[in-house]
Image (cartoon, rainbow, N blue to C red):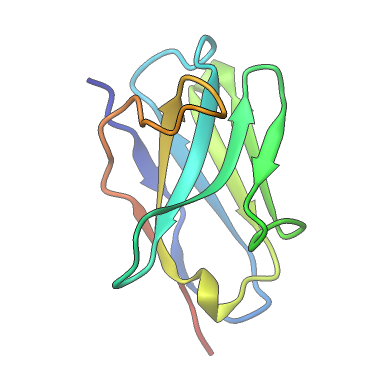
Length: 120
């Protein structure tokens, strides 16, 4: 079972930026959809951004225009560039794989995630 390793989180002021990385212990070239999720304290995990093997991307309304998902198949890595961060973006961020945009079931085990805290 693949367990990704997320990194890049930290404490940042509102309006700041962070770049998250997710390294998978498998070749991601053939993975149909790679996605970033987040879970804030006391809330359910939510889908933030998804990217297909062909380059199609879907963002949640809450991050559209501020976050950018990308993938580097050669490095088996998925990135999430987060700009104009807001306090409500505070959460633990996770990555995972899916079979398609309409199939929400995660294909990998969940990693430890990376904590993002947006606060002044």
